[in-house]
Length: 305
Image (cartoon, rainbow, N blue to C red):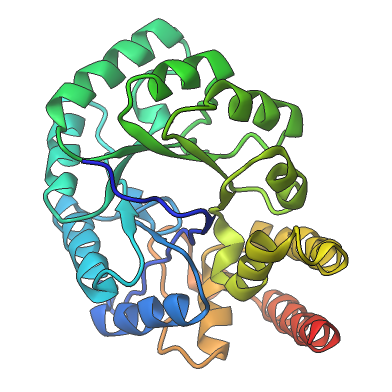
């Protein structure tokens, strides 16, 4: 059942739309090739960056199937996409995602219990889903929307001990918590991928498997070099860490519109249209932030060459 979930960089993919608001599969094909050419180790399709809460179930399934087919085994693909409130509907969504051919199906942590429900209730639902979604590795995504459900090390260990989990997208942004989680899952197949740029290098030193975050839509090659070479190139790793930590502040400004603006500036045929944000509110100062960040990126790249 288990496939290799390689360490390294797993971008949380954006979804290109046409100006009319439909999923743009031609642009998505270009985007997949761009990620792969940047050296990423896997693709996380159908996540919050993909605007999954604004996609129909059929769109979520088609995107997962399309990304898997276009990647064609060159990198593994994982996907989430259960957004319903009802447990039964979520189970159906996840079963159908598993049928798209993705290498792992990712559970959204906040979908499985409300903010006032206990970890015991949450775990009980996870165990039910394990039986309902057989024969595929599972992951967990600590998605910030509609509320952030962070897993304790103890709860994460209970998941890991089932032998079904291979991936955690960690969003705690806290090195002490990350260290405790890494320690809790030692000896299991579950690997922890940090979503926070500022703590990335420190988390790699603690044993994190890599990066899965928003900023891999901007400068994935920087994250690839950092995750692959941080031991062999300690001085370069510190320089890259300083860049990516500061650069990550741009994700607070009109994401994912700003990511699409950046990708378009890189030559990808990506419209600024989003369903989760009004691209018309993307002002000139937002554009300047992205352009100046890219100029700084090119400067750092030259220094590291």
